[in-house]
Length: 113
Picture 1 (cartoon, rainbow, N blue to C red):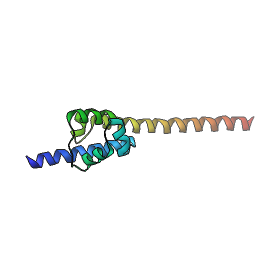
Picture 2 (cartoon, one colour):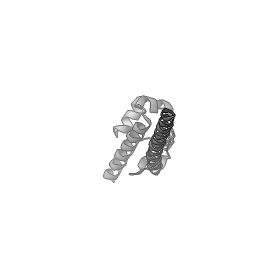
Picture 3 (cartoon, helix red, strand yellow):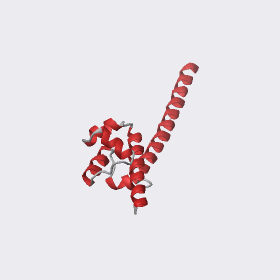
Picture 4 (cartoon, rainbow, N blue to C red):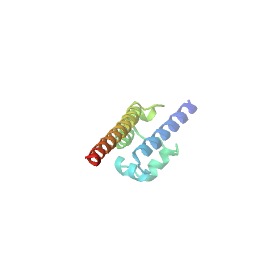
């Protein structure tokens, strides 16, 4: 049982850090958004403290995820957001390329005239 609790604490700490990093939040900023102290967030991330269910909800809300995602090895919400970011980047590249080609055609046309 002790190993399971330690594993949960590690998973929670890892997911908080990972999701904090995705949002570019410092421990202090996460603490502010979750209405907690920076020290308390640090202790959770160091696996020395384990938050109450209410605090888990506040941390999850601050991280813009569901509380249960703090205990998943893979986050469906984050996976979807990552996929969306990749697709959006590819679309932006294609649009940028198409615009550049169109501008070059217009310039070439005006140079010929």
